[in-house]
Image (cartoon, rainbow, N blue to C red; front, side, top):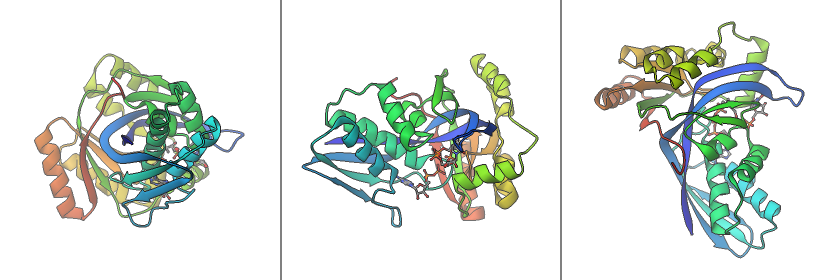
Length: 287
Ligand SMILES: C[C@@](CO)(OP(=O)(O)O)[C@H](O)COP(=O)(O)OP(=O)(O)OC[C@H]1O[C@@H](n2ccc(N)nc2=O)[C@H](O)[C@@H]1O
Ligand SMILES: Nc1ncnc2c1ncn2[C@@H]1O[C@H](COP(=O)(O)OP(=O)(O)O)[C@@H](O)[C@H]1O
């Protein structure tokens, strides 16, 4: 039996550079792991894939990314045997936090251990990329500059430990929808990735906070103005910076003081009734 965590992410920067021939978008993004994580327990079975999730409504068949990751490993490695996967879900779903990718990455790592497959990180990432663009990052974790459709990764120095308040507005945003809406009206204002990377390398956190930016934020916000409302509330509560993660709709606020993050989370819940999570940035796996 193997127990493994699949961690959420936020995008500190996200730029879309163009539409590719394969229908995906070329992106450039600084991704950051969070301590907020699902827990997955993998148990060897004689055959087949059995999946349970403690969150009602979430698929437990081949539509679940965790199920697909297990199937891919079994096929790729010619495994004669199966697996039972039990997921304790803590990452909000369809939130821009890559919860599904986190679970898939955990299953790839978990299967590697459970069946002593000795797949390298590069092999795991190549398998992960077949299922979803964010999965290679979820396998690596930490602070990463990702390009291509998200699978080309340059590990960066860890972003310092900082408190993160996540607030998910009560609206659903699908990733394909966000990219299509981006194509229909690409925003003019874009994050400056080079400046962000320079500031990060120099350890200039004040500049980093100023340089966060997500080109999908105005796209999702146009359809869901509540995103802007949540961002303003985060700033009003003293966040060093606040922004939507990925395709949204979750808004994160970064706080240097634990107390002020905890107070914000509580107040946010009280004021809006939103699903609010208090967490922290997390470093790379195995480091
Ligand atoms: C926007 C981002 C930012 O990190 O995260 P989320 O908001 O989903 O967490 C990612 O690019 C999401 O990656 P992921 O959620 O893995 O996407 P995938 O499953 O690979 O693709 C779902 C769909 O999104 C679109 N897509 C995804 C990635 C990409 N670089 N270009 C795209 O156009 C495609 O329409 C694709 O069919
Ligand atoms: N293990 C999983 N956890 C969450 N969602 C999953 C999972 N497997 C498949 N999905 C599907 O993927 C969709 C996007 O989920 P998620 O990865 O949480 O969001 P996002 O792409 O915004 O980061 C969900 O609506 C759900 O139908």
